[in-house]
Image (cartoon, rainbow, N blue to C red; front, side):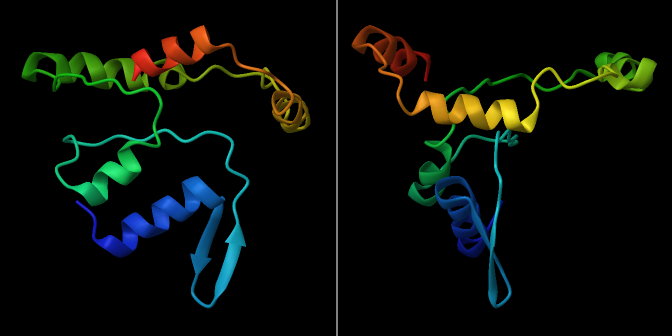
Length: 117
């Protein structure tokens, strides 16, 4: 649960890539945003943030029997995080972002993305 000030901060972060830090406004080099929640939104204020996420996956809670397996998986061999170089540097990601501005998305692809929501 979050109050309206937190939700407004999140919307500024997502929409404008800025964070109001006291009297100052900080630019945020947001590349990807992943979020989790214990419940779907139940108000219009929350819908405004929820709508910003293109892909959503609802999962059931971990069962009592599954907790041990979850902890074991998270703590074995680095918790599933692979070591090594990043597959894409920040410069390459920025180059791809700039190239995407000139990309035309066909209507059938937009339709598929809309249905994925």
